[in-house]
Amino acid sequence: MRILFFAQHFHCHEYKVGPPVSQDNFHERPELISRLLTALEDAHVAFLGPRRTGKTSCLKKIISTPPTGYIPILINLEQYDTVEGWLLAMIDNVRTELKKPGPKAPWIVKTGMNLLGRIEEIKVMGQGIKLAPNKKNSAAWRALADKFLKLLKETNPPVLFLLDEFPVFLNLVARKHSKDEVEALLNWFRSARQDLVDHAPRFLVTGSIGLTGVVRKLGLAPTINDFDILEIPPLSEKEALEFLTVLAKDNNVRLAAPARRHILKLLGGAWPILLQLFVAEIRDAAFRKSPSTAELDTLYRERLVAGPRNAYCDGMFTRLKEAFSPSECRLAREVLKGSAALNVD
Image 1 (tube, rainbow, N blue to C red):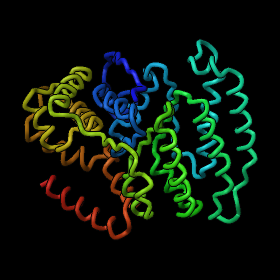
Image 2 (spheres, helix red, strand yellow; image 1 turned 120 degrees about the vertical axis):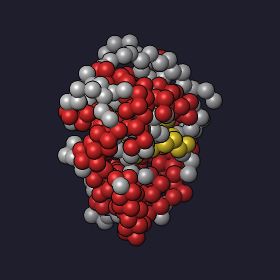
Image 3 (cartoon, rainbow, N blue to C red; image 1 turned 90 degrees about the vertical axis):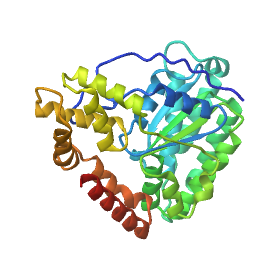
Image 4 (cartoon, rainbow, N blue to C red; image 1 turned 45 degrees about the horizontal axis):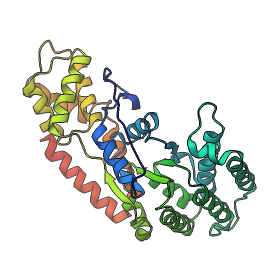
């Protein structure tokens, strides 16, 4: 069933470098966004990849230029550690969209105040939820969840829920409550996705730590097997070389074609954030001409890998424990240490 129609109109702007790189300063990836929206036509999607590789920027682009007739709702789940908090955030955002002034989407015009009234009833019900002393008791939020699902099925709103950092949310719920609470959440959410597969609402979840690793660590892998999983890839060589050319021009950095190719060789993976950090180091070194291979090697070892600007690798190294069991985490860290040593040598 085809439900999404997406027209892309991307503007050109200057790419700035330096700490920190803002979300709005990521390299736009229209082909990747098209793949996401095509996948959402027939399924709910898990959009996964490391932190600061452009996932949130893709979501913001969908917010600014949504599929025709659709209302995108972006929720950062890192701020919630209860299931009811997440549910109320979705309900609140739908209510906000219903109340917005200006032209209304056809489904809002058709359902009118009746839909808003039902949302208000659910909201009042949700405010009455009290956290149960028994952490294994998920009944407190289940009635609210079922009411919300029923509303989505009966009114069929074209809402695209963009749920950022879903695996982090699962870990937060597990820490505050229990694995049983996460299991109840994931089982309900899977059932809800299946109930809505032939309806307009869609869920897109993202994760900067591996969703598969998190649910496997909890012993709950079957609860996500219906997602269409898309992993964010690095830029292709052609895209990366073009991006480096624009970065150099916009930041008054001399960077010849051989230097651009050597940067890609050193990095191994052409992630936009790492390309921006590398150009920032070249700019700060104030080369009068395009840096040589030896100069780039030195910058890579002494500034990009070991310098203060790059907290990215340390952050991901620390976050391994969130996706892996203790034994898996130890193995992953040893593999990364060995790989880093080979890279520097």
